[in-house]
Image (cartoon, rainbow, N blue to C red; front, side, top):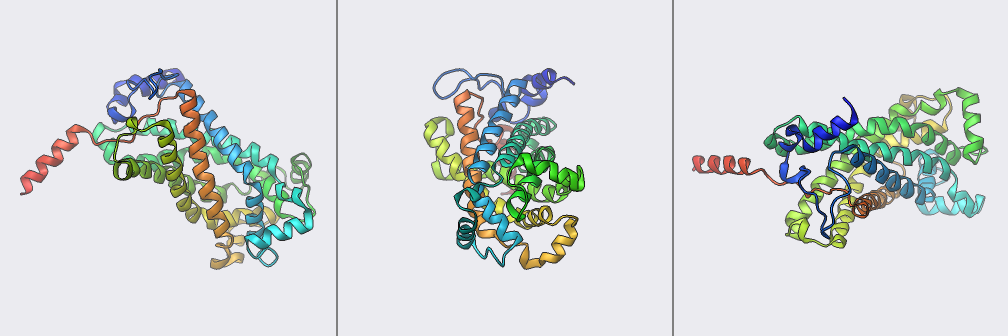
Length: 348
């Protein structure tokens, strides 16, 4: 099936229109300021622009926190020397100067830009496809499962794009005496272990990133839904763009805290695995032990909470700026409301 036919099927076909029509239907074609959307929801252009939003969202935020990420990785792989976040910064500054805190910025920028493109673009696509497989009522009732499945599917491909640059980044940041630039590091790694050097961390990366992304997208979607329903107490269409973006940031930070905790053990294994040449994920996990895999959790919570909130803020802000369709949070279909009301009356 071509991308054009898929876009038409998702945005305008009966299969997609039957799925949460008040939420995801292309008929919602005007933004809050009265200007028309730049494209149809579910079109090829929509997914391409969502991918571009992911590039800006993930590439810029991960690059911006390279110093904190570097200290976190060093705590994970050498806790004796880098005992905590304050000590980590102090030791790094004393030994390498301010420039030492920005080691690995180039592979971070490239790797997470690619990851963000696949993560956000494919999430929107898979969410549409999976939702379109269900009728209106099941799509609403099973929406959490849809978010989980769509985010896991998207991250599977996103990590394949990320893995080589993640391996280079960790080696630069954590291996003393190793190359300090992307240009110098890649030939050394290829000479040592070939292509395996760049992809040996793919399995633990999936173990880290897929649960992380499932939590990131699902908790964000459900938190946004909760905030509009129980905190703001008014429809999103009645909120200003500023109010909407504040809610996006708050929901993103809450989601980020959950993400950090869920994915941290696998993150520690990835860091240590890429530092120790020739090791396997199981060997690293056994060496670290139950306590060791939780080293660096506090800086990771700070990092991931801020990172996730900023990513959602940038991504949603990009969609506002580009006038992409932004459906409101899901609402229960009228047919389901009637069924639940009838069931309640019959039980009395």
